[in-house]
Length: 335
Image (cartoon, rainbow, N blue to C red; front, side, top):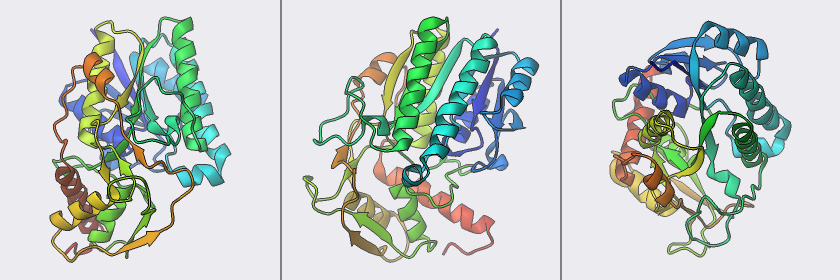
């Protein structure tokens, strides 16, 4: 009989989608979230404990009151520009809080740990080749560094104890639950498809394209966009892998191919009902690589995971649907 799963950040964008699948799989779940960016309405399953991941007293209570054998750790700050202007906020919440969580989990005898990491650990590759997991890490912002430091702590703890883990490095997560129950509700989001969908429904006036002179077919940056529901399914596959005795590992989460900014804009204009969205071309941003694509051989060799939503228009459609849902909830007409 397996114990409970602690999901930190389970009221947030990615955590809530994983939580939905855990509930549908009849897993016993406890959610820890301070609701600073998450939404209690997104917690579709399990018991919600409102508190901070870095609060040792809260963690002690959670682990004391529940038989937890697995931790899925999503709680983090994720806005890259903010990490540059306020780095200590990111090292405090993303790194120090993870250390506190790891200590509590280790003392409580947790068996498995699945960690939400990021392709930002690779930094800014200068070529367009897919990023393999063995590529040297060279983050260029505090967000990426804060996540890499957590990866290292988790690796070292697993080496010193019986804890096993899977680190999942996300590429560009996009889309929303096809059932329409949950989605990305982050204020001031910076992810391209989320912003483009907000422009399409009238929540923003325009979409900025940063850089049109990259060494790519149309001059704009290329990214590997993965639907959040496929990413969530990868977490359940990682859980099954560890429960079956799998060794600790690190895996990219992406589709292995990318789309340019202009291709995303074309998709938005195909899918939504109104006029083409307004686009403003801007100079390149410092540190943006021309392409960031996942090498995915290792995840397919390691996990029983087959993506179901590997289609740009599908990703965009679910994003647009969610923006319309948010407008309706706010009492506005999405058009």
